Structure formats: structure tokens, C-alpha cells
Length: 378
Image (cartoon, rainbow, N blue to C red; front, side):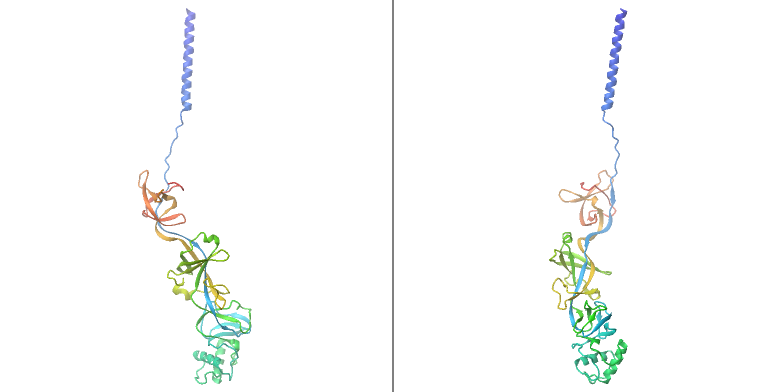
């Protein structure tokens, strides 16, 4: 009997131990297999306060300005150029000094007959009359008789003029002392070869006059031509002046570059009424003016200015970053304006101008707060 009771107790204890073990394993299994609890933290949306800005996009391209020129007359000076006394594009009048040759001045006077001989006592002719006309105009000659005859009064006038102009005073005007041109005053450029140290010979071209309006051109490389429009608006800057321009034509060149001709919006020269004040930097040998053949003088006056091709016109207004814009499948553009709610308020906008990652838009107000999104969202 006691043995049976001990057997029952042993069996009961064993069963209880098994049940406890199974219960513990089940609890451990549930604890092990239960998914972890993830603590979520709210992420605050990035925002931007709409401000008024000016936005646009343009590409900088140098602008070459050229003026066609025409020969005034061949020179008669002989010797070495010792000074150059006029700037390219300067306007000269009768009596102005152009340069010195062997330290002797060369001045410009009005007249259709070129200098071809020395003018002194007892010479006469149209060239003498041209000299006398200047001497009277400048106040050196008062006598009215004997036009075209180099008499004592003319000699006295020449001596007075020579003293003031820096010539040796001897009463004789040498062949190379004067440069007769038909129309004065004139805007001129010296020939590119007329520099200090150059040796001049009679008959060489010395001075050309600027004729016609300046031509404004841009030249684009093959790479540039693929990035910018070849028609439409442009701008040119000279000092503190900025001129609006239009690309009026585009012509391919033999090396694959593109030559763009610029005009003012009304079709005239880009510089408008300011052309006379536009400085000429240099005269160049050969070349073209306006994309066509060089003038007969084979010299063009030129200067290089700053310019830009307008890719996107500038506009001023409420401006947002590109990250604030969402484009829908139908092509419409929206922003999300903060309004105190979790989702915010969607607002349709119209892009007026874009550049440098910003856009001027219609549909929001300055001061509105808009949400920013990652690229590619929306």
C-alpha cells in the first residue's frame, strides 16, 4: 500500500514537472517569436518661406563689334613713326595731329587734292588754296587776295602755324607734313601697321574713316550652339550701359561654329543713339564686317564687349525652390502650402521663369510656407 502511494506521488510529481516545463517553453517561445515593438518618431517636413526674387537664365558670350571703314587717301610721309597721337575711333578736325614721323608732326587738313609736293614761296595751285583755307579758318591768315598763290602773307601765316603746331619754323610745308582728306571732322582709325617704330613710305595707306553703323556679332562653338537658342533676345554691355538685342540671323562657318548677328529690337544697331560714344579698341587688317566681305580698305575697326544670350527671360515675383514643385501626370504643377493640417493645402501654380534651381511662380503669395520634397517625388 505504501509502495503504491509512493508510486502515485512520483508519477504526479513527474507530470507536474513536465507541465511546468512545457508552460515555461511556451512562454519562452511566445517571448522569442513575438515581433519587436518599433518606436516611431514624427519627422517634421522641410519647408521654405516664399520670397520675392528675380529669376532667369542666360549664357555669357563675348560680342565683337565692327565698323566698316574706307580709305581717306594715301600718305606722303617718309621715315620712322616716332609717336601715335590719336586713339582708334577718335574724331579729328582740321589741324589735329595724327602722329609724328622722325619727330616731325603729321596733321590732317581738309581738301580733295592729296599732298604731293612741298608748299613754299611762289608755289600755286589747288593744294595751296586748301592750305590757305585752313590758315584763314584757324586765324593765321587774314589776307583774302591771291587764293592759290603762296605769297609773303601765306608764308608769315605758315610760320606762325608751324610755331604753334611744333614744326621747325621755316615757312615751308613739307609733303609729309599734311594729310589732306575730303570730309572733316571724321571718325578715323590709323592703319594697323602704323605703330611706333614702323617705317613709312609715300603712297602707303595711313588713315581710314569709319563708315556706317557698327555690326554686333557673337560666335558660338559647336558645343555652345547646342546649349542656347539661336534666335530670340540677347543683351550687350558696354561700361555702365546695357542694350537689349535680338538675334536676327545665324550663319554656320567653315569650322562648324555659328555666327550670330545681333540687332536692336527695332532692327537698328544695338547701341542705338549711343553708337558715337562707343569706343573703338583697334583696327584690324582684313576680316569681315557683318559677316560679309571686308570693305575696300580691307580694314575694320573693332571692339569686344560683354554679352549674353537669354535662355529664360528674367521675371520678378514669388519664388520657390525646385524642390517645392510637384508635377502631376497631366503636366500641372503644384506646391503644398502649410495650413496647420497634417497634409497641408495643395495649390496649383504656373511657372513664370526658372533658373539656378528656383522658379518664379503664380499661385502663391510672398510669405506663404511651402513644403520641400525629395527629387523625383510627387
